[in-house]
Image (cartoon, rainbow, N blue to C red; front, side):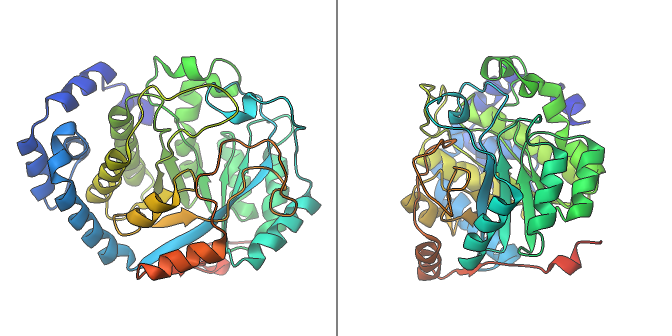
Length: 371
């Protein structure tokens, strides 16, 4: 289990290590044909900042070599804003003015009709973590209802058991996105004081359960801004390499969400600047040529346009974070504030204007699913 690997590393010692790394350490890492997580740490260190332009050129080369001039488009579909957790940084738990909403299967199908009409064939099903309402049986119903409309179905919901993931794979699930938020085990309870999400070890083992259940693709990441982003990103890199070695038949993606404004008053303790986020994107690509790197609408349009050629391979567009928000947009309860509100057609034009091709679908369902 990855927790055994994670506990071999001290958070405080890693902070000291990254601060002590030199420009030469970063140069040595950049000059290697293959890079380890320790090389990755050198590339995200403050000392590596002068090498950003060189890192960007190499990241671009590696991305074009593996993915070509393409940007995969996907859209999140929020199923429910009910949540039994008490995350201090999340809008779902800091706003009691609006009615909570859980979509019926009919409402899910109506939402799908809208987003499929825009051209999307990759959908990410998202829900607040409220197992008493949105459980594995509900997700199975939803997946069976939408799988024929999309070539790729992913979920970002509460951690499930291995047998539940196996049921969802049989129903047509392609991908599980599960974010640890922070790998700082000592401080994790400060951000997740109650609810099932308070169980750090159970959440950390979720990618293992998904991989053991035969989930074809797994997305991981840390919420940038909670803790020292460099140390959290190092643990994410370790986690990625562990998963690739353990569940070698699978595919993997990295998301880099920065904390966004929401209905509460939480502010990031360790904010990451635009330049540092570019450095991090490039470092992930230099570490792993195969991993998909996703940049959501948490980021602004200018930033997303710039990073298309620096390692990012997947982007959302036209996103709404309120359940039912595609059929009937309204002032509902959102998880966080959208930062890039361009409609899909405008996002497609932005991609093409930079010499890239928007990809709505990259495989057919029959290639990866069995009835």
